[in-house]
Length: 316
Ligand code: CP
Image (cartoon, rainbow, N blue to C red; front, side):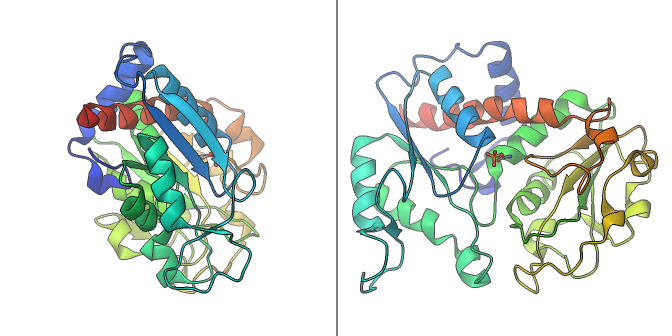
């Protein structure tokens, strides 16, 4: 694996899941792989889990780690080619990416969707520019359209907790008053399409995700019907893809409660975090035995370790 930008960079999903589970049992078994190598983690947006778990995974692999909040710790970066740079951004990505690439062996980047221009967001300009100018492997720490380290952690969690060979996994939209990106939902669908699961996606009308991500997932607009017999319920809010970035609905009846979970086949609840309690998910679910949110977040360390390990092996 040269880069880790999306599922398309994965050659063998089962092998990658196994690699994460092996790392969990023996975190320091590949310390030599990263020795005398450096990863720079660039954050254009806030993070708790991604920042700490990726740093920890890199250290487990023997890597030196540099973490920067772009625009706070360093200069604001211009991404567009050919512009007159008379705005707030003092440095162009052409120079910045090339310079960071000269110091570091890998670069991790978090850069969210603007939710104002769908074409630009889905073109993933920040990642394309870094890939072009840094000339070192790029790791997606959540982009405008995808969050593959989260999706790999989700695959590891489902593998650990599934009681059936082919579980029913339901991605459900949750209510939220703010417009949030589609990245986690897109990515989850993309990865579930390649996992051995039955994928169902449920959301109010107007919240359809891009068909390229939903793939073979079955879309059901009735949440109660979708939840019937589910083994895993994956909650997430996202703003509209078609009415790009808009909040069309905040119907509180889409919140996940114990009565909603009672429709499932003793299903487990998953969410990538962070989440707003009692708006998206009720305390009774999060504090009860069905919730896997902490286990899922803990697996972010092992998904990051599996992905970084694969890239380091190919750097050898
Ligand atoms: N799930 C996730 O990516 O969490 P952070 O935004 O805190 O990194």
